[in-house]
Length: 83
Image 1 (cartoon, rainbow, N blue to C red):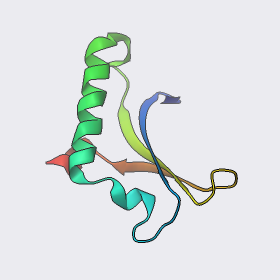
Image 2: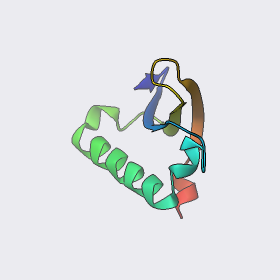
Image 3: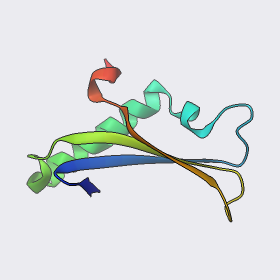
């Protein structure tokens, strides 16, 4: 998606229960690297977006799917975080 002039890659996580961990805690460094590689592939195959700055957001849902607790975490991680 885009947010003004920023290209946003969104990882969506759902957990019925936040026990033992909250949805955002399931996004490990390995998962972050896979998301970043997917973003790089997207940018290589869709050159019209290469000039956009990019960010990685996380959308979490917890609880019942009919009335989940929803959290949007902008800038959840960056390419620099991946080392």
